[in-house]
Length: 253
Image (cartoon, rainbow, N blue to C red; front, side, top):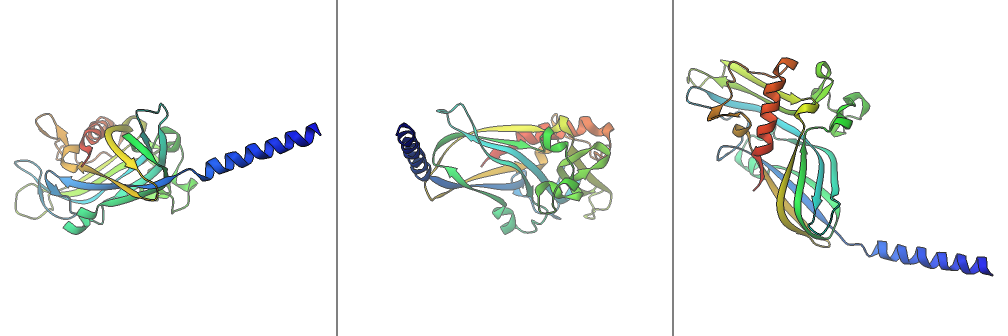
């Protein structure tokens, strides 16, 4: 009889727990990423002024995000929403596409008020210790184009473009190949932002990044003629500098 009573009590507890679980409420969070160049939407193959002597046009701009968390001042434990994902502006070829940006949707986010968003820029060390052959092609880390065998690292941020040094309107004077990666370049951005997730509703946060600011150096910009690429370990300091800038260039719009 005691065993039967104990079993019945256990069933009641499990039923109650199940009911509480069923009553949990969720909404959807959308992270909309937009790219700019100064105050202009970033469009691939469109010319932009780099400095007084150079014009640039970009062919690629993409990057990994990771360990995306939201938090509330009432909670000491952040809630992780995304372990790894990929933001890609390579196909942005008009203003409408630039305005739409790249949208990442996270479903089943618990309802409530939040006041902080945290985003990792790059691939954290535990995942960076893996390689693209460990994943299917459909996985964000399954991109052969973004695994850097020589550095045993993913390319966290890929920027490619062409440079016009003589202002003749022809971008054939130099190329940019800033492939930023390796564990020392991983950065985290913590953004204070109040937002609410409501049951069955979609909340959108728009994040903007200014590509020109990634090349910031002192009162001007990096010398992309002297250092047009970051393809060897000798360019690690330049990669770190660019990722430091990226950390400052990403903000909530």
